[in-house]
Image 1 (cartoon, rainbow, N blue to C red):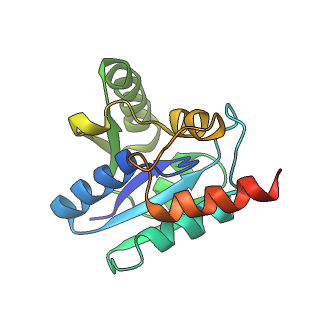
Image 2: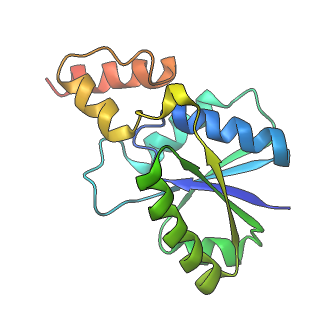
Length: 159
């Protein structure tokens, strides 16, 4: 069974990480698919995100990381995907994911499994992480050390 967890992951948060590990525990394999979100200004390139995520999960042999340019449905059909995993933090996420699940079922023929975030992760998003970080706040509780280190390097380069 091919299971994917798609997202922009700019950057990957501890909330994302926990959803991936929950899916891995149940399905035994997860393919993390990095997509470009044209509605958001990216901090990291797709390649940078792939490298960061690969580094975070390097000890897991049953997690793959791929970049996909284009429609998620194309990736789903070209890779025989059975299940799409998504994370839900709150009722707003749930309503949005419910719509996305229906569209993905109609257009791609794939089922969506929703994982609810841990209570400690309900407020974490990539947008919040970037906002807190670039306004001088501490994000150690929200991201892996790999992300924290790369953000530090990138921020210093841009000063």
